[in-house]
Image 1: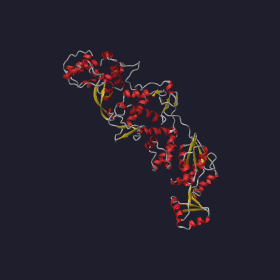
Image 2: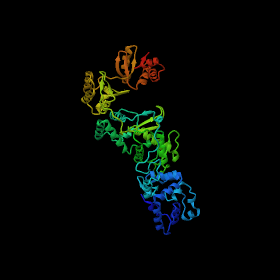
Image 3: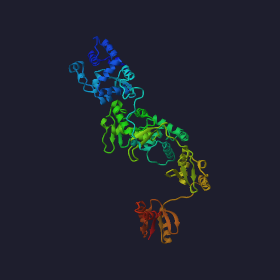
Image 4: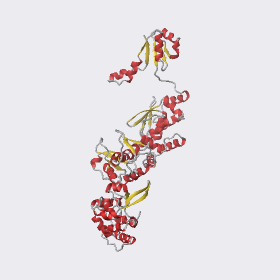
Length: 565
């Protein structure tokens, strides 16, 4: 960073004299270069600097402290937003109006004291204009502890965290961090491989995609196997590391209640790194107030994700009323919401933070960094039980790789509170066959993790399925029933036979799908009127039951029947 001489070498002699008067320095020369050298030497005197700082108003000291805490520089747009701008004027107008006698802002007061300079610095977003302190002036302020606050030297390598510690009522109801994201990931990976539709979860899908776990190629499947076989602590750390580097995981565009238009992109990686750095400044193991953390960020770096402090070029709408959210006035709904989402819905979800609120129903008001960085992991030593009817109950601690394979060759059932539940049936095994699984592979997985082994009937059923496929079928079909068997035989010999299905007895026969109306119309032409009760059955099945009794009654009709009368 430039030193004080570099910061002031472009100002004219009149400006140097204004600065000198504020420092109570009598310049002995009118040659600009010599005057600058003389002035800088005096400004870098500890005693003179301390005297000047003591003459500053509290708000002016706060502005210098802000620069010191930011290691000597802040984006110009941010600095003037907090401390006001300076009026642009040439030497003639300046000497006539003497703005330094009645500064229009804190920034202007510091500008005419030589405590704030203005220049461009390279950033990850390209060159940006900054307010800054000369490097030698910054060093003196820090080493001499001139701007200490409450006995603590500022401007050192570690800044104070944003916000304040949380009070006990603010963390009365705790939601501890966990590694449950690993179980969510296993469910999604298994469902993706088995073709089981799950409700959309953009956050998890983006994470798995960024980690290279959602592809279909052989390389992707090997990555899945390696991920599932890692110990839980290693798997969680690996997943977090992939997230840190994932440009495709855009937290901003995941915010609920907002919609985004246009081709602009937010600096996702830079924003994530900035927020992680701020969270890392919070003391480990100490509950920290979340609203004050967010407010502190708004006060010190509101444009933490906006290139060059531009709050107007991103097209973001509020979903509820389609209103555009632009300018610093929308900070709480965009940036503020992003920080809450980042801490609650990302870092806590990934197991990096505990969160808490005053009550179980209240919003989150506090967070706590974990002492060892990750939540404790339980061993994956769970077992499964297989009933002779094909129902499988698996403990939640079943190894993830085992549950992944179960999800591929079983039908998924609703999980119990502490158990996963599956069923082996012909449909799920047929789907497993399409993925290249064989009966011996299925039996091997079941045998490895089943308490009591695989029941013999299930072993025989799986082996028969590989040889014969499905041998029993359950289906719903429409049936024609006749009072007189001779009428059924007459129908089978008519032109309607192409619409008929299997013979179900001397007085019943099936109707092919979609042929009901044609059959009923043709029967009428033959002089046979049929009573159609299928519409009543369908309506009864679809209507919500009004009582437990009605529910029992409406559940009884399983066959759709058209009776001849």
